[in-house]
Length: 127
Image (tube, rainbow, N blue to C red; front, side):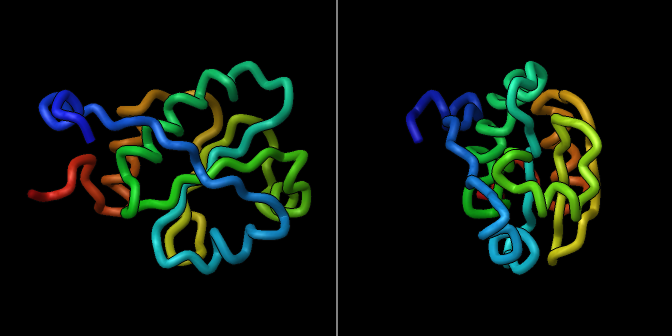
């Protein structure tokens, strides 16, 4: 992390983990870390708008929360099991159980506050 990142609390973006039907159970349901899943669909403009927020969350919570992205066309079984009715949908899982569901685009602050409220994980790790 660079000096400006440390001074201003800016987290570098990081790509989220790709989830599909083959790895859903292992990466989400059996994860040792809390999990955030950005469920998106092809040709979804709001999904593209949410992408930088998800990348920022992946950088901010690296090693503390597993941040994932799941295209409905790559994981139709998982999307059906989760009863995804629209995209973007952001799901919060802890110990294999869904704790929260947010449909639509929300900003970084909203998701950071949700992570702290649901998982008890602050934006910045204690020094």
